[in-house]
Image (cartoon, rainbow, N blue to C red; front, side):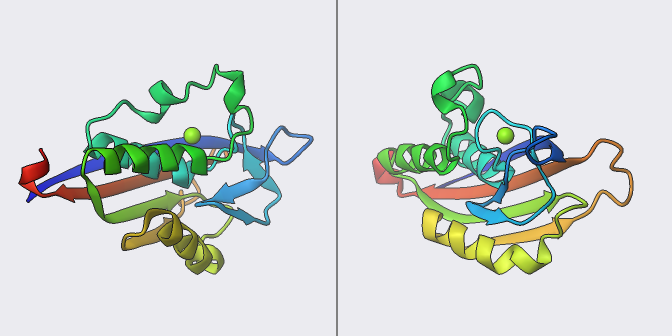
Length: 162
Ligand code: MG
């Protein structure tokens, strides 16, 4: 069995939705009620961006910024599930199965707790593998309002397919 691990990281500044330029807050494909939202080219789903990069990194493919540059107008406001599904397709094409995914979300607002289960359900449906997600805060150091996400993905394939 060939086993590899990949790490993904994403950060988005947050601002007031609408007037401040913030988009609706979407995490792991789940829209969350919040006064603030990400400043982003796509829908700004930092969880999906970090998970996508973790999977792409584990299987040795180009990163999300290379595959979907934010200078491409086609991806303006794009649903980030498109990026994750591309990573999953590349994994599948290479014979890789996703072992598990571990995610840490760091932001002061919104609180992750009330939304954790819904986000986990959404991600499990998309990825089809065990995953865990945990929330941390910036401990009041959040001078610039932002959301950060770290993700690890373990992938595996039988050595016959390499
Ligand atoms: Mg991003």
